[in-house]
Image 1 (cartoon, rainbow, N blue to C red):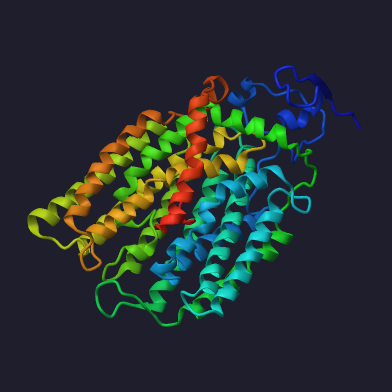
Image 2: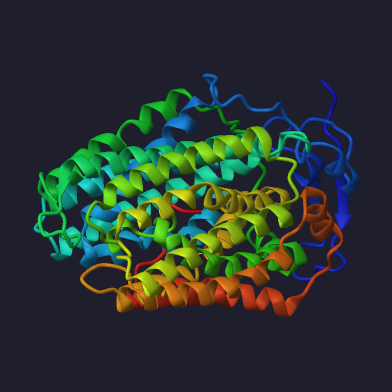
Length: 498
């Protein structure tokens, strides 16, 4: 067996580190799963433009090596959707605790192995935490400290699972050739949304709106629902144990070097330009809140809300499947512009009918308007997610997704609070629609920040340059936004979205 090439380099620019450091070349450039410690040709930026971003075979998600990821993705979509409804409006802030911590969870998963694995163990641990916490909350009185603590701990478990799964997703997606990269990613995300649609069907069967104003009455009490969710959360555990393969061959962890490389990562233009894109494009989804594609389902009350949600989620999942087969080579800017215009047109027509004709914003036409936005919204969803794969460096896979998704959801709590302030008897009003239109105009500015295709992402990543001011802004936001949302208890980032 050929010995692995080792480079001994003097750290002249890093005075606070050891004077001599040993780097294994496969860790510095290659895939730490399939090719770790194996002699190989050093990668350079040209390799990224011509083929996959990391070495390794393309993953077959339906094989016994990775089928557990599909199960985990579907169950996560199911559980997070049901929990957002079951805990009630008073506990919705606690139900989002895991999302406030997702950047921390992602950094831990990227940096430190647990029981020899960087992803699999954290996903298992997250599901175990969620199961125990759901059972504890189901035995406590609603809205007391034990119940709220159980909900928060369950959310943290789901957030840990989501962060580790995102890192696994990036690693597998980067093995695909540049022409077809994105297929693995779309498959896992579509399974997540399919799980959400099944959850909506369950909620439709187990709830009743006797008042007509969206005040839901459960056929089962909240504690019974949490017990059901706890049992469902057991399903991914054996699936991950026996049907997910991950190598235990990992590089050593060095704290100071990780801090330095993380700071350099935040300075990269690809990182902060996409963060700005996610932040601005999030305002476009002030209109998609009509379709509840990116909002806690509890806050949008109509006479038959779960029928709307169910149909929307199913159309959304099938739209992702269509994009997987036809849309991987689209021009990202052009596709994002067309879908944003399509959603804006639906919003303008709905607003005109509400204001001029007196149409009820919760009427049957509004339901159709929601369903018409499924395809454009799904396309925008993927176009916000696909660039993350291209810019994620080795060693910060989960962190990249966590940071960009946090930026993508920063505007969401403000939009939710706005809709809650303007609604009448639980229904959307014309004032709410006007504000959504104004925010959508701001969202169109994000199109100029979106790369046109994968090669432009790679150009930004390798040759875009560095900015300390931008890195400081990104880091400050990562701390300020979760703390502020947690203190205010606003309806924050639902796990069912990015």
